[in-house]
Structure formats: C-alpha cells, structure tokens
Image (cartoon, rainbow, N blue to C red; front, side):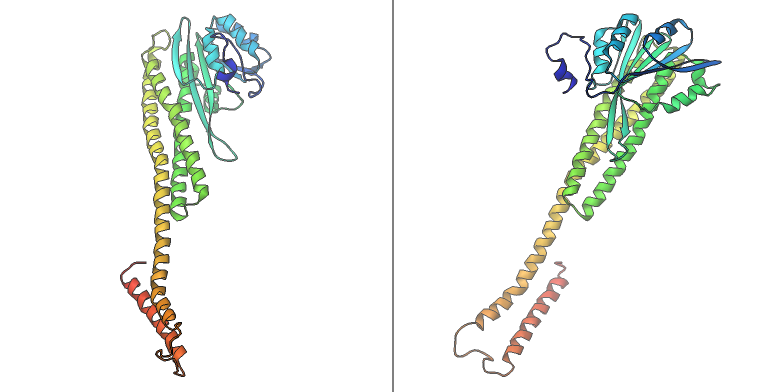
Amino acid sequence: MTFAAKKMGLPPGTIISLSDDRGPVRISYIKYAESALSEQVCGSIEEVFALRDSGETVWVNVEGTSDISVFEKIVEAYSIDRLVVEDILDADTRPKFEVYEGYAFAVAKMLYREPSEGYVLEEHVSFLLIGNMLFTFQFKHGDVFDKVRDRIRSSGGRIRQRKSDYLFYALLDVMIDNYFWVLDLVEENIVSTEDSILSNPDKESLGDIRRLKKEALLLRKAVFPLKEAVFLMLHAEEKVFEKRTLKYLKELHEHIVQVAENTENVRDMANGLMDVYISTSNTRLGNITKVLTIVSAVFIPLNLLAGIYGMNFEVLPLKDHPYGFIIVILSMVLIAAVLFLYFRFKKWF
C-alpha cells in the first residue's frame, strides 16, 4: 500500500508510516567544531535534543520510519509543522526547499545502483536545518554520504570550520555528484543495449528498453524538481545560509543544471531505443523477405520446366533420349545458377 492510499481520508498533517515496508529506526549523530569531534549511536531521539545549545555543529541522521513516536517528539521539541513530517514520511514527495519560522526543510532523491541486478533505484531523503543542527531522514540504512563523514573526521578541513548550512550544502553536493555517476551508468547501458539491438533485436531487448526508459524517467523526476529547489536556496533569506555559503550554492546550481541537461540527453537516447529496435526489426524482416523472394524467383522457371515435363503428352522434347532426364536436371541447375549470378550482379542480396 502506498503512503497516499494509507493516508486517504485522514486529516492533513496526520503522521503515519508504512511500517511494513520500512526498517527499524536508527538514530546517530556527529557533533563537531574546528577542534572537537564526537560520534554516537543514540538509544532515543531525546539524547540529541540537548545538543541544540552546544554551540557546535550537529548532524543527526535518522534511518527508518517505523517508530512514529520519534517524529512526534521532533515536532514537539522544535515546533515543526506536521505537514513537514508528513512529507518526510511520504516517499512520493517531490524534491523541494521550504523556509519556515526557525528552520528550513528540503527533500531530495538519492540515486544508487542496485548491486545484484544493476538497476537504478532511488531513496527519499529529507533535511531539517534548525540552527546549529541538521537532521537527515532516510528510509533505510546506507547512503552516499561517507565522503562527507570522512571530511568531518579529518581535522583541518573547511567543513569543520563551517556551520550546519555548509554541511547541508556538502550533503547535497555529494548527492548531485552521484547523479553524474548514475547518468554515466545509464548512458553506458543505453549504448550497450543499442549495440545489442543492432546485432540481434530479440524480446529481451524490449525488456531492456522498457527498463532504461523507466530509469530515464526516474532520473528526470529526481533532477528537475531539485534544480528548482536549489534555485530557491540561492534566493533564500540570509538567516538560512551565510553569505560565504551562497557562492557554493551557486556552484551547486550550475552542477544541477548540467545534470538536468545530461538527463534530457539520456532520456532522448532511451526513447530513441524503440525507434532503433523497430527500424532494425523492419530491416531484418525486409532482408528475410528479400531472400525468400529471390528463392521463389529462382524456382519459378524450375517449376515451369517440371510442370511441362509432368504433362501426359506423347510428344515431349528429350522424352525418349537416353540422357533426357540428366539434361533437364542440368538445365534446371544452369537456369538457377544464371538467375543467382544475375541477382548477385544487381546487388539484390
């Protein structure tokens, strides 16, 4: 059951979860300053509430959505709009960026490759930027943020000197960089599928075409709304982002625009695969039809001779000749060879 179907008929802002489809909640945080760092896996969400006044940057990562009480407590502790939590729990929420009183909220889609089959999949990721704290919400364990974690753990880096708004930018930047990698994978699969179609357009190729078109559509639905969201970040109030962070957001916007352009190219390539399949199939069918036509043309005079000598007349050429049968057979072979050479000379096959 989808989130929208489960929520049907309930008042706006009702906090529900698809607990059957999501894993248990795991809460962890990284607290850091230029000369300090601490990491911890929490037993409850209350452990991170006291970190708001620590003066250090705090990244709280919440994985899983089965425990609704976690989100209820976040709503109460930080006066979060319940509609925001509803968007956090709804995997179908499109990427966006919104500024509220005292916090900012964003949604993005994390794209990755399914390990066993190689399919492109997405995961719904939400961000809550509240003062010195950044909350990230994921539906399951595993993400593309390990490079950011390594940068935080490495002392002396720029990220350790900046606040939570820069951390928010850094996480989005890693996600968008990963889009380039996913796009390259999809493009390679499209080229490989196209080569396969040109050599042998079979039913498996149709399945590959459908999958690649779905992946191209998935990319477009993830990238284009995020491009709009990053544009809104550039024009957000100064209390959300520091001035020194805005220049990085401009670069982020350039990256997402480039990703959007590449996404359109990949989508055009994926949609063109069906045209390649139809064209190749028609060419193959035309070649088969041409060969069968040539075979039929070769046998027309042979059938004529066979029909003539199959008549029940008393007088037929070579009827009483001792080598009549052999002569007729050789004549048929000669006629077939001449026709074959003529068709070959005309380059009809």
